[in-house]
Length: 292
Image 1 (cartoon, rainbow, N blue to C red):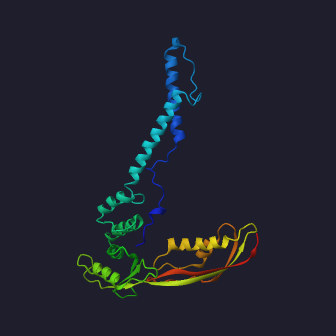
Image 2 (spheres, rainbow, N blue to C red; image 1 turned 120 degrees about the vertical axis):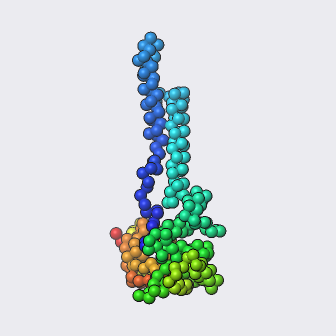
Image 3 (cartoon, one colour; image 1 turned 45 degrees about the horizontal axis):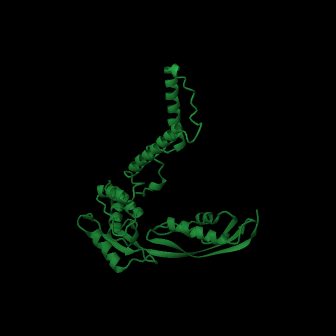
């Protein structure tokens, strides 16, 4: 069962895109309509046609703009209320209440993104065939120091393996952390009767990156430094257990503004086992010249 990326969902149609100018213009048009109606109904008053754009200091202009601003604030508050009920947007205490509906409670020190991920896992784990998400949800809930976990089997073996990736710099899970996860998974109300669960630490594989780079003529000398930082940042966001390290992917991240061409040297495409996670080690970018 694949994970749901809430951030990739399209914007909900129920959330309105606010446009103050359009709202204020509606109020101004309504005022002009009412003014003209009064003029038509009372010709004896000799009221002149009213240009609502005449003066910014005109009381009618001030009133309509004030109403427009109030309307934007009100609609914005309605948008916020809607977002508080959507898992993709709810944050802080709003997210806590949504999570509680699924019997998920925020761990001490847990940020919103991690809690949101656990809520998704809890929902998936309750569905038919949701054993893997269920076990991952339990592992992630066992301790805040579990950065990631993957549930998998090997071949036709019925043994269920749970690889734990910790928040430690090297990703290795300590014996105490593994014990906490194992205890949570072996609980009678968690483990299915016929399941044998083996908990172990995931492995961090350090990979060095090397490439030749050509810059555009007007690119500054710090371009290579920025390219390296961009690659590291992108991988930090994408890194997960079992994620392959594909050459085309990391080359694309080096193609920032100012870079003309990247010639990859190493590594080639790396197929990563389920219980391993790639960490980028040294990045060697050799400037080979400038070109269009």
